[in-house]
Length: 363
Image (tube, rainbow, N blue to C red; front, side):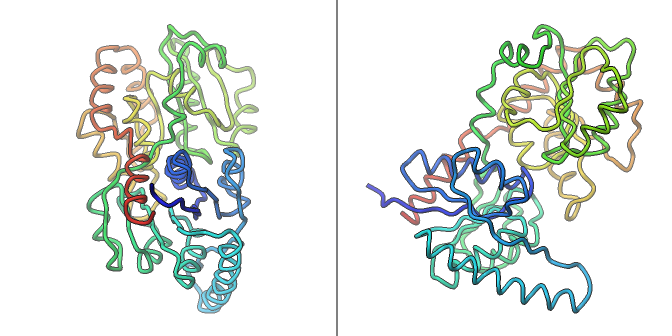
């Protein structure tokens, strides 16, 4: 029998880091390993990890400054202090493995683990790795990636394993009728799900508003605005148009996906992994505010397979995009073909594969 591990998940900031981390962690927890989370108490992980029953340790937040020598010196001193803090917390927790998932808050626990001789793994969800994982890869014992080409973009000589992007099993458990009852919509009517990531996205919300305003719209909208946009959008709409449901943040994405026939969203790897496992057709609007425009690279893979329509934000034409959405939701045949194409790309057991890999090498 494999020795039981005490695994610290480190990193976060957005759903693209947090949810794959928890999917991997929960797969390990189901096998009897102890799970902990080190992250920023004021970001998404600080709320979601405790909700999932995962013991959480707050690590002092420290973001890398993009310019200014003095700022970078202060950052270096602050990083040293945060690494020392993480060392103390790792010793206190009895950690036997640290799994870094990216986001600036991942670096101190991973570097602290290196100083203590605790094994270190990182997982990179995107085609283009972020700054934290580029740093942590130099000190890792194993690098796991979603895309094969990502391995060459990370420094260090740790072994690379292509594992895909883990999906939270909860998103697979939705039921359309129950979800429709929860949202107060008609399960027999076509439904667009709009979601701009855990924080929301202004461009996605602009498209949703245009769709909601259609006078002859035959479809419903579940519109997850993002917490910071909810009040403004509620105020601007006044009386909600018929068949439009506003949600600031959705903790039960399984319901939202189950009710949806088409998804309008960004193109982070975590989101695309969910879409493909569930076989959901999508309109993808890649975020332009990411390293090396990696979301567009992510999205083009689904587009080339016939699973998605890609709308580039710099070329956005709101009216034509809404016309495309309306056309798709009016064609069950097109949606069915896109759904099958999406599902052919899905990797439903990535978290289990990761657990096998970790147990085989470190337990």
